[in-house]
Length: 436
Ligand SMILES: Cc1cc2nc3c(=O)[nH]c(=O)nc-3n(C[C@H](O)[C@H](O)[C@H](O)COP(=O)(O)OP(=O)(O)OC[C@H]3O[C@@H](n4cnc5c(N)ncnc54)[C@H](O)[C@@H]3O)c2cc1C
Image (cartoon, rainbow, N blue to C red; front, side):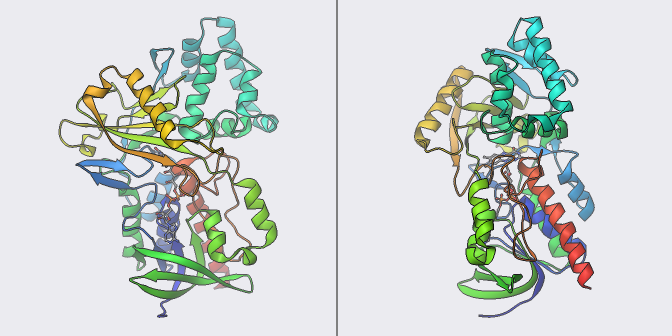
């Protein structure tokens, strides 16, 4: 076993890991990022396939939020082009969402009953004012208190399924309304013209320029600890096993895998039990499509009352660079009926395809499926459903988790993972500074 030393080792180059790594490198700490794959970014990366820049996960990047804060703090540019406003399809009709009064226009499209519109809108305002009182209710239970209109349920389902990878009975009303309060709206999202891999690659350049290292094709196999304090990581690289000592270890592999690498006995029985009780991987489906013609007028469509499809995203509307000239890249996202139960994934994809043929006349003639993806279990859409997260601290001193299994309430997806990296980097700085 050969030896090298770093102050901080980050296991995994997902957005959570890269945000933490870049922030700490920028603060002058000697940082090593280890990534098992040949490519950076995890579920925020890009595969070039037949000339299309296909995402490995995230395509929509939040603008003006925590990701931008991290980029600013490390002195890097975030090249994201605004996606423009979303549209909904409600009972077969396209509904434009205005900048103000979005809920009013959506609920009005779902029902002609004026009293019902006012009742639901009043309930939404009240819920946004007093999120605490909603804790015992699932979102489905909350909606049922105010309407039985299937189209209204459909609107909420499309939002929750597309953004939280959850069904209405898998997310609490509290978590949903805290999220809505923090959300600035889909208008503040966009796409990277070079693909989502531009984000981790930009952060990796920061790590390198501040004296850190980034090792791809390097698998972390063990997290070392002694007397309850992290000591470093064992890494398989170029067929060799390397023991790399460090003061701090930050894992971006999800809390479960972190515990396996650190050893369940070292994490303690109470932590292992809490993790078993808490974490619920969130499942999602994705179909990546090449099209000769645009399927959408804009770039974002939320779909209600379908079998499975909840979103159709056409990033080439604003970023034609993502496809060969004259072609469009379309991402159709779907939600299975449950994130947690057993299911037949082939059947799920079949339902998605049926939805797409119903939504777009001529779909079969103009399009070709490039890739299909099913994210669940150990490779989930999110490491846990919103509101079912572990803390980023672990029972081992100086061992942290970052990523979408340790989300702060009200944040999901990339912003949640980036935020965990930001919080962990702050804590590490404080601890290392106190140690002198
Ligand atoms: C299909 C899909 C679509 C999505 N769309 C969006 C979207 O449009 N917008 C949005 O904001 N979010 C979206 N998300 C969610 C978003 O992609 C994730 O929340 C986010 O990327 C998770 O980042 P993370 O920090 O948890 O790291 P991850 O992406 O999970 O990365 C972890 C990294 O660790 C590496 N690793 C694991 N184990 C080891 C080991 N032992 N040694 C070395 N390396 C290791 C992995 O290879 C991986 O690269 C989507 C997710 C999916 C699946």
